[in-house]
Amino acid sequence: MKTHKVIFSLIFLSFIVYPTIAQTVDLSPEILQFDPFIWPNETPEDCPFEQSEEFNGIKFLGIKSGFHYGDTWYPAWAENDTLYSPWTDGRTKRLDGYTDWSQSWVDPVHITTGQGVIIGDDPLTLTAYSIGLDKTSPAFPYHGRYPCGSLIYNGVWYYGTYCLDPAGYTKYGNDTINWPWMGPFVGFRTSINYGHMWKECPHTPEEPLFGETGINGYPVKIGAPHFVDFGKNMEHSPDGKAYMVAHGADIFDTKSRGIWNDSWITGDQVYLIRVTPSIENINDASKYEFYGGKDDNGKPIWAALLSLTMPSLKNI
Image 1 (cartoon, rainbow, N blue to C red):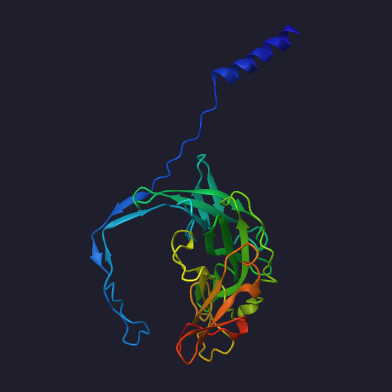
Image 2 (spheres, rainbow, N blue to C red):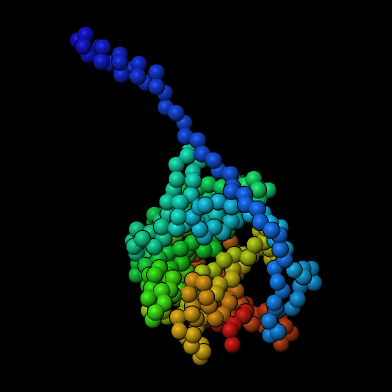
């Protein structure tokens, strides 16, 4: 019995003498300096856009502020004055000193996507960190599933994902191409507590929100949509609706460009869609409106069906 008491005492004392040391982490950005320069103005003669009356050039000030984190950050400005964003394909620090690692390509089933926070008003003193990973968004029958459109409105975070194929490194002749085929936009998972808990997306890659397929490179129109930035909590929306732009292509495109018609970074057309954001609406295709061109008076036409949409911009 004495032996047991001595051993217990030593164990007890070891916890008193050697307390746990808290993790510390530096979440400040890396600052780099370079020579300032003005971006050359080389607007093509056939550019379809008018010259801005407010801006006539871009000057880089010679200061770079950033983080060595994962990519695909698309911040949304919430009503609590904080930026929330998806991220993936890399590592991002957490507040507790550890690091989250997200991979949206590891295999068709074990896909992860991350969510993060950006705090601050000065780009040189921002704080950015991960608040967790999601593992409920498989890509099958595709091979990648990535973040895209992200919106926070009235305390609800809408986090969109889309699919890619056939692989992150795909041989095409003598070239190696990064994800040459765009897959469909799957839909949104939602959170009502700023990303700490999530309601899974009700759609799947095989049955996505808008019913499109990208199998074997079949062109999709709404592949990787992104929200138009209307400021904090969408305060500058002209009609209370959330607008999204998406690049894609259609089967009637007569100009062949090999694999460049519709990938994660290339597309022949740009589409515009809109919805009144709510948990009930965001994953219901019948609640969306699709830009369908202009009427005889030059006013936009909003169609109820994706099949009636027209690109707002296309490669001709």
